[in-house]
Each structure stands twice: as structure tokens, then as C-alpha cells.
Image (cartoon, rainbow over all chains, first blue to last red; front, side):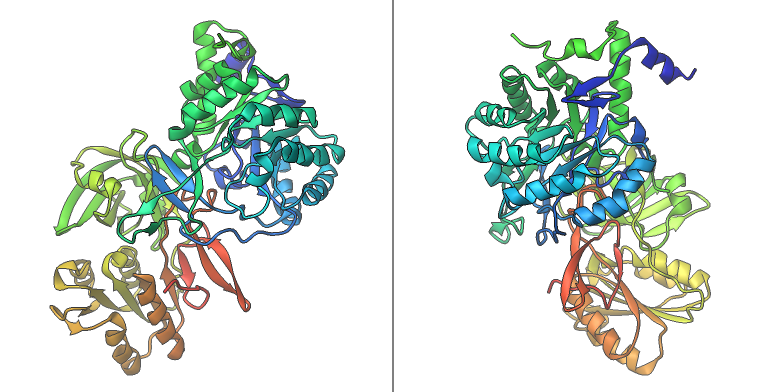
Length: 312
Length: 263
């Protein structure tokens, strides 16, 4: 028995995210991990709790003009604009690879209309090797769809209901932080059939070049991610987890096991590593190891004991 | 296969004001690195600056395991790098990206570099010379003090020509002013170019007029360096239209004829 297997035998890292059985709570966030292939040199893909693949749309999307990204203090802004080859290419070229690697795959889906979400869901529902869907109603970088679906409870619920009607797969809804009352949106999408929630998506922001006196990003605005947003994400997870019955996946600025643990203590059942993958491509697997070691050292037999343990 | 290596600084030297050469002992990366590829360096270990910085492999001594990069101090990251001393370590990811194609039968090649665009061309010159090609390099800069790589190139036996915007050294004018006579006088097999996009666009246009095939190395803001973040997109021709490719993953080297240059 390897050292790692011994550790696993001592502690339980398995969690259930709204019907998706995860070997551990550590997943990688959509748009930061490509289709897994990009990281195969650095991470054992099968070991991750789940891989949430790049936001997928019905038709191919070219994405936004450049510059698309700019570094900010302890963070970065991006306005990629959901560049992706479309669902058909995903199914033909990327899904077979992920199945072969025995990865737990969650597909992030986005659309311009409710109808597009419904059609996309129906297509993916028929595929083997997909553990669940993550509904993106919070992308700040596209003109239509995206964020506009995620900022109003009724509209958000409409999208989720359409997805729910077209699949028996577990449905995770990714919420936007760019709202006044995130709990109201959370309640609405849970009522519409969400099995789990992931929060947060990026915070809308911008940067200005003082030499040219123009916005840095071609899209003017972009989504802020990275450690800079962690306190906001943590607060929203804490707020929402106490108000809804479904499990939460915490996302926002996690770059080490201590960050991941904070989210779990705030009420997250799983966590997702995003921008951290760009800094250290092997960070996700490192965090799994470090969380396991933490449990062993603390004499905690089951990571689920820590979910929401910080609630007052 | 690319890897993360803790590289020890062998040398970090200002060669002309504002420009430094950084030599790193990174044997795992050096063993594999090819001309045109880059490394992605984490500057410091704190959360600010957060992202790695990409740098072309400027030179590579595979036997010693030493990679050299050429960099210009432009912001916080490179400013911090300039302060680093011999013996300190840097977290380096590489080698990354698609290298220059170096056809086996190359006889005569011409390299065109503008400013810090010389960064990927010196190692390319070295490998081309080792393969027995006759190499001509046309090096351009705004002014004589910003000319880069001349000594390295001359040491390899490369025929070096210089242009400066202000005429302080070599031909006064743009690199294309120096390139046209070269292409008229001699037959080259291949042209390689790196520099500001308007310069690369003019070089690509001239190469096309002379029926010369070539490649360019592109640059864009980058985060992951491995094709995941989709930040470093660039337009390439697709029929009458264009599509985006990732510079880090599908490049940074592209055929001159396929790129839609930002001018």
C-alpha cells in the first residue's frame, strides 16, 4: 500500500455535491483548466474531485478581441468572452479524452437564450462520461446571456427550469457576485431545480492605462479573479450556505489548502481552484494532498465534519 | 514534456541601460528547450505580482543546463527581477510553446529583430549556424544604445547588419529599409522575424513580395502559458475571415502568411 493510499484509508475525503460523488472536495474551475489535456503533464486528472470544463455553447464562439487579460493586485481581469469550439467539438474531441483519463467531468454550459440552454442540455444529457452540468448564468464578458441571466431571480430561475426539464444529470448553478442580494438568486434557482450552487463567478472590474488614457481591456470591463476576491467569495458562500438546503461549491482566489479549508468551514461541500491553476499548474493535486494531511494531523476522520464548522 | 523547475540564478546582468540578461540553471528545461520556445517565470513567492511572466529562450547551453533570457524592465515584475542576485532561485515553468521550424536543408537564412524582439532570435541563430546554415541578421532599434544581441551574433559568425530609427548606428530607418537590398541581392531559403507588430507586418509583406517563406514570434499578455486561460489570443487568417489562436500553445511561432497583424 502506498503512503497516499494509507492516508486515504485513515480519513474520508469523499463528498456528494448534489448527486455528484466526488472522490475529494477539490475541483478545478471552468475556464481555468481547458479540457484537462492542458494540465496532464502536471496533474493526475483522475485524482481531482472533478474537472469543470471550459464554458460550452451550442455554436463555436470566437471570443473577444485582445487584450483579454491584465494582472491586478493579487488578481487578474479577464474578458475572454466564452471562446470555445462549440458543443459538437467538445463531444467529439474532448469528452472521449476525459473519459479515457477517468476524470469526473462537469460541463459548464452557457447560452444566449433560454432555448439555447435547453437544447445544449438535451444534447449533453445523452452523452456518456458527464457527471453533471454547471449552468453559467454569470459570465460578465459576453453581450447577450451570461450575466443578464444571473442578476434577476426570475430570469435565473427560468434558465434553471429549462435546464432541469431537459436532463436527469445533477445541475449546479454558478452564481454571480455582481448582485445586491445573492441569497435571493440562490433561493430562486434552488426552487427551480438546482441540485447544487457554485459561487462565485468573477467580479466585474476594469483597469485603465494611464499612458494611453484608455481602458486596458479591449472589452473595457472584465471579470476579476484571484486571491483579491477571496474575502468576497467566502462571505457569499457563508451567507448562502446557511439559507439553502443544497450543497455549495466555493470558488474564488483559492491558491493553497488553507484557502480551501476556509471555504469548507464557511459551508462549502466542495471547492474549485481557478486562477491558482495559472500560477502553479500542479496546485489542485497539491491541495488534495495537503487537505488530507491536515485531516490526519488534526485527527479528523471525515472532511464533512468541517463543512460549515465556522458558522456562528 | 514541460515541467516546473526551481532554477538558480547564474547571472543577472544589465547589458545596456534598461535591458538585462538573466542566466538560469534549469537543466530539465534546458535539455528540452528549442529556439522560439519560452519559459514562464514566477517572480517572487507572494500574491502580488500574481502571474508568471513569459520570456523567450534567448540562449541555451544544454550541456551546462543553463538557459538565458533577455528582458527589458517595463513594470513591477521585471523591476523585481532586475534586483535579483546570483544564487537566488526562481520558479520556472517550461519549455513552452511551438518552436521555430528549422528545415534540415536550410542553406541561407535571414533573421530580422526589432528592439527586445531579438529575444527569440539569438538561440535560433546559434542552432542555425550549428546546422551549417549561413545566417544574416538584421537588427533594428530606435537608437544605438538599444541594439541587442550584436556581440552574441558576431561571436557565432553571423553576418550582422544594423538599422536605427535615429541613424546613430548603421542604416538610418526601419529594418525593412535594410531588408529590401538584402532580398534583392541574395536568395534566402527562409526568414524569421520578431519585433513590434507593425514591423513584423511590413517584414511579412516584403517577404511575400519576394516569394520568401518565413515565421514570426508573437507576444501578448499571458497568464497560464499552457493554453488554458485563453488570454493570449491572436488573430490568424481563416478564409476571408479570421479566427483566434492561443499564442502560448499554438504559437508563439506562426507562419508569416497566416497572421493577421495588429498595426
